[in-house]
Amino acid sequence: MAQTPPFDKEDVKRRMKGAIGTLRHEFAGLRTGRANPAILEPVTVEAYGSTMAVNQLGTVSTPEPRLLTVQVYDRSLAKAVDKAIRDAGLGLNPQLDGQLIRIPIPELNEERRRELAKLAAKYAEQARIAVRNVRRDGMDQLKRLEKEHSISEDQHRKLSDELQKLTDESVHEVDGILHAKEQEIMHV
Image 1 (spheres, rainbow, N blue to C red):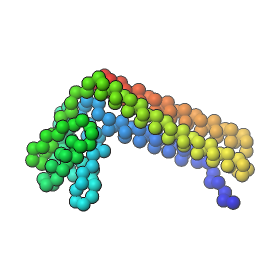
Image 2 (cartoon, rainbow, N blue to C red):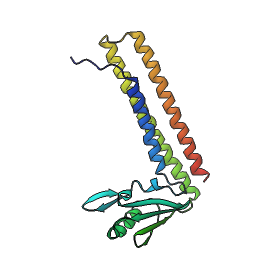
Image 3 (cartoon, rainbow, N blue to C red):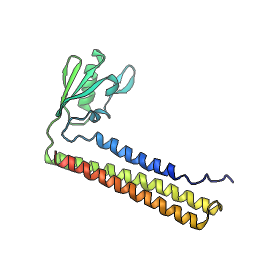
Image 4 (cartoon, helix red, strand yellow):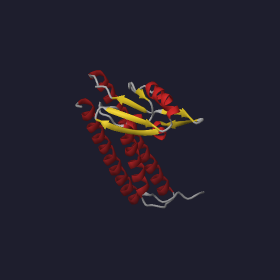
């Protein structure tokens, strides 16, 4: 039977930080009424025979707090980029001007703010689940190590407590990030 690898606490930390990093990335794409180039990250365009991200086809910038611009590198793709932004379901209405696409960021109404807050809560719950899954994997590994007599019962208990502490800290960090994002959405 194959030996279970030794318990790697740093790997667990890295994986939990990865879940939090993913949450931060998801939150960057949530539109809060301020122009943020990350809003366009999920937008893809059919170009050169493949699907490409908008930021690969042009320079995305924020010249004003409520305006995004995309300077498309290839003029022939400007219409396709404009259409992709319109069709992305972001509630944005780009204005095409040659190779430059201006995207005014509309003011958020109360209903839209509530929807965004719910979406933020959903992303946070996904991050919590990811953190708990890392904990579960770690606990399973500790059980296997104890069963194989690679660690003692006391070591198992100590490492389990450390794993739970890491989990609690990570979930607390997720909650803090969510609270900050909710404040940003509701009080822009």
